[in-house]
Amino acid sequence: MITLHWLYALAGAIFGVGITVVALAYFAAGLNSVLAFWIAYVLTRPLGASLGDFLTQMPKAGGLGLSTMTVSSIFLAVIVALVAY
Image 1 (cartoon, helix red, strand yellow):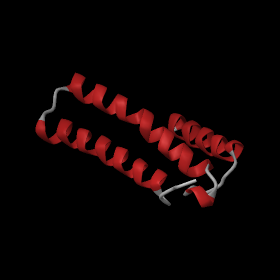
Image 2 (cartoon, one colour; image 1 turned 135 degrees about the vertical axis):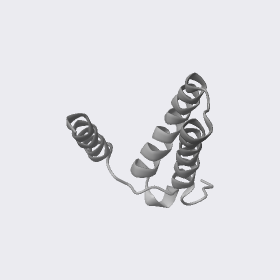
Image 3 (cartoon, rainbow, N blue to C red; image 1 turned 180 degrees about the horizontal axis):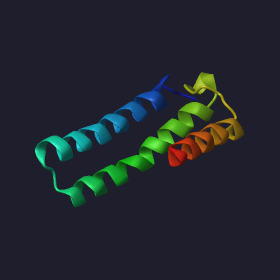
Image 4 (cartoon, one colour; image 1 turned 120 degrees about the horizontal axis):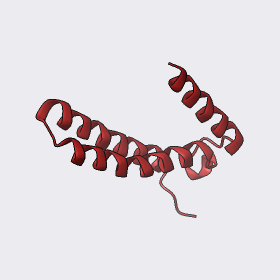
């Protein structure tokens, strides 16, 4: 298998920066709210996939090697905490 180590993390960072740029364009430059929503909405899917792959793939493939149950539990705890907040 040919792999570039940390490619999942890099992809996640790229999509995260993309969402940040959209947010800045919305708040600072007056980007249309509907357009900003849809761009951010579309970018969340690859962001989540990159983050999930980074956390669950084996270290030799550029991930952290956590189990899917561990990652799901962490995500559940974060979501519950954010909703409770």
